[in-house]
Structures are given as C-alpha cells and as structure tokens.
Image (tube, rainbow, N blue to C red; front, side, top):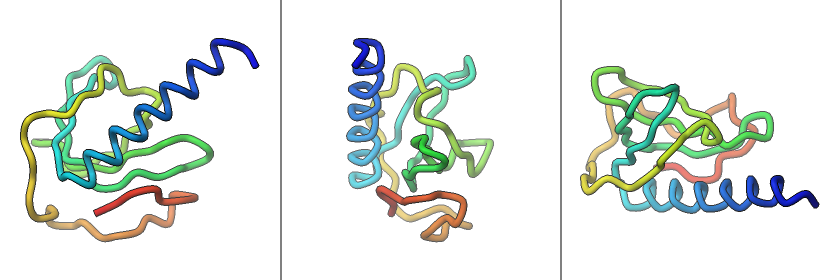
Amino acid sequence: MEARALRGREREARMEALLRRAIRERRVIAFRYGGEHREVEPYRLGLQAGRLRLTGWQSRKGWRSFHADAMEDLALAPRTFDEPREGYARGDPTMDRILAEL
C-alpha cells in the first residue's frame, strides 16, 4: 500500500472518531471548509458513495452537509448544544450507511 493512501486512511479514521465523539457529547465542532471557518452542531455522520459525510446545523446558514475529506483543521469547540434543532429527523435515505447520529 502506498504511504500516501495509508496516511489518508489514518486521517479519515481520526476524523471519524472525533466526529463520533462530537455527536455523542453534543459538542460544537470548528473547521475550515471551502476556505471558510465554520462552527457546526453535528447531528449525523454517515457514508455516501464511500465518503464520510456530516449533517449539522451551522449558525446563520441552517442545515448543511459536509464531506469530511474536505474539512481542514477539525477540532472540538468548547461549546455544547442541548435539544436538536427544529427540522431534525433521524435517518437519511441519501446515506448508504449511518455511523452515528443523535
């Protein structure tokens, strides 16, 4: 296996673990995506066409989906959230497999 591919899989595994933890602990996450700083309440992590995808609530923008492989500088923020936002429903038929969700 090529070293670069291995590093990519290791990075994905670390990101998946951090995103699962953020969902479980209801912790806001911070990251860069598309060149912008984002702070998101994570609600669902799953696989879509073999890629990790996160669904969450972003202030002033509402419900958004993010491909984990496009996130940079992912970190847990010190803030938590309590009740799910309006419009949240468990399950997502567009995901092949759900890995974690509220």
